[in-house]
Image (cartoon, rainbow, N blue to C red; front, side, top):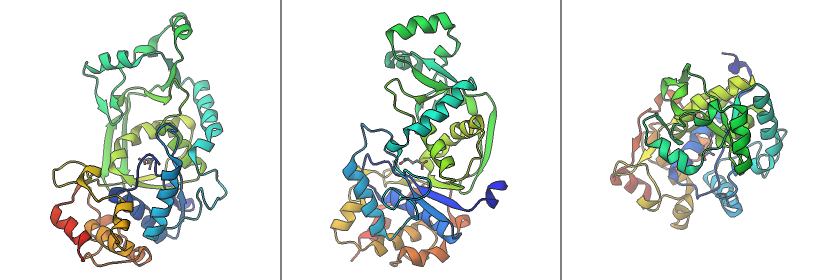
Length: 326
Ligand code: GLU
């Protein structure tokens, strides 16, 4: 495929609305290893597009945590680079430009639905995506007159018209994927308050930063069909995707704060060495035979995407005890 002939570039794109936990460290490490093992360029992008939930101190802490792990990047908010700025809140003009293009192509329409409308619609069975119940398309067919009447009362959000096609793609870890593009419904690209959606921002940024390889957590696997439709509508080339399985706690739920002691800051405060965490993550990934300490650099020759499981990784207390021993 033609993305193989572009220079290899990957990225880690954290959202500074919470502390990094071991699940994020795992995605960051794998993405870094994928790119470093191909001698590519690694980019760090701060995804603070949701300014209400993002915190500057968390953005700084995330960079500190990643450096502590032994990861580094060739371009990023703190080191600059040719495709900056590397902080989403400073990239609004690029998103607006893409919106203008999509609007001119007839891919967008204003949506006046209130939260209450959406909740009511959600009770009807329309399909589901990771962003909640599928939008039933209420405003898709408004006549210009109806839209004009509604616009007096409410600032609209902008939705992208999804097509009804079947989307298939090969995921580097999860394997062959098939989705009905229409399933998630028409999705928001700009909220009524002006906030640009994750889906749009990530596509614009990955393209402008010339990203060829995206490796991230499997929670974003079902965003790929939406992103692929945006790539197509914008006339852009999509990167190769790989989605790393999520960590599940002993209770079978996604590993989270409530399982305790899983934020990088907490581990560091406990006096853990980064090599201990990295070695443990490599063992969990099946890329190292034992949970012995390893530096990030030492892991580069061990990286093999073929060995990664597509199934969620169960982090039992027993496995966790290896992380916390000594
Ligand atoms: N900022 C997103 C997150 O932290 C990741 C986006 C991506 O990797 O595409 O969940």
